[in-house]
Image 1 (cartoon, helix red, strand yellow):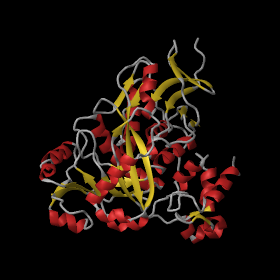
Image 2 (cartoon, helix red, strand yellow):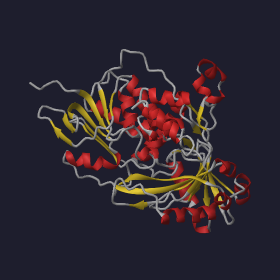
Image 3 (cartoon, helix red, strand yellow):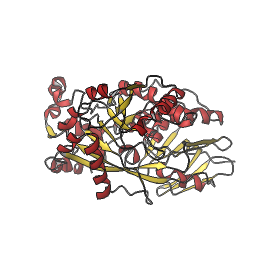
Image 4 (cartoon, one colour):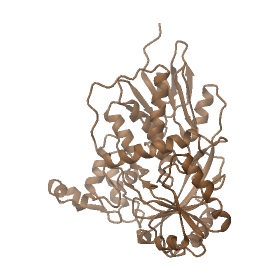
Length: 460
């Protein structure tokens, strides 16, 4: 007789997709365990991207990605507004800089219509420059995608994980999975430095390392080749320069360099697209930054007159396939969620729905939880939201909400305390940055670094 299993579902990887799946499955009468190799959720690929909320207009029609991005756009737009995730629907302008690029417009429009997106429309040169007067000279026209938007890449996985944990999910951080084996009587045994864990079902959402987990179970279906994207973040004084997401005409390899606002009030330029060997190679390079500055000077020359706040690089989980590598092996209850590229943030909730349905068909019983649905809101750290230091009722109740620690981003002692006490608490400086914006401003922690370190040390 088989020993009782430790958990119904084990999810490997607490990036935005793994957290979304944990949130979805935790709504049912299941025991769910979410395993993350790093010290925090959403701290890998999920935090270092362009943070666009994609409509899916330019996805390859007929792919799983195209369907899930479109559905995810709807789900995340509603969820973000409900739980306090910063989101802005700025719209996008896909700009052609020569006649060859403009000749691609009919195909892009046809692809958008095939994906069910009918709001795309061409605008002329005069209209383009009236909307974006700081564009460089030589644009030939643009396609307007009015509902493309921006979303906070930090709060999104944190919100998913928070809801999952409040619903009973067992989140285990700093718990890398070093081995996976099938059990003779069904289920899986996962090996970690802290001991073994047995599970009825296994969800592989390990991102850059999803091919490795897949191979532990004997599959050879895809290989993740990290694709590094470097980005430059400009000071908030640059924000009035750009009103929309300014997109490039895509190629077979990349969607090109874009210029976009951020929900934090900055302007972003990037990314590059370079395949690298190491899955931890997130270094910025002189060549990459020089290329971005040259592109920025061409697309929006005035942007280069502003100060740079930060540079960073993220890795996308590119594979040899054009679509997500998402499959469920029904007899054994194994779901592989691999090859989720830059659209994974937008598609995350739809991917979770898809995995839920596929696991149900594989025999996982999905009975609603007896407990009422979890109700919560996240601290909205977007530039357009009302921050703690502006809320008199908070300060009257607790003076720490009026005591600013990070003056660049107006982060208060109360917000830092809340991040350290949250259901999914910050455990390091990076975690505090993503929960509060502390250390993200012009001085990059020169002024507030010592006090933040002291607050962290006090919780160590």
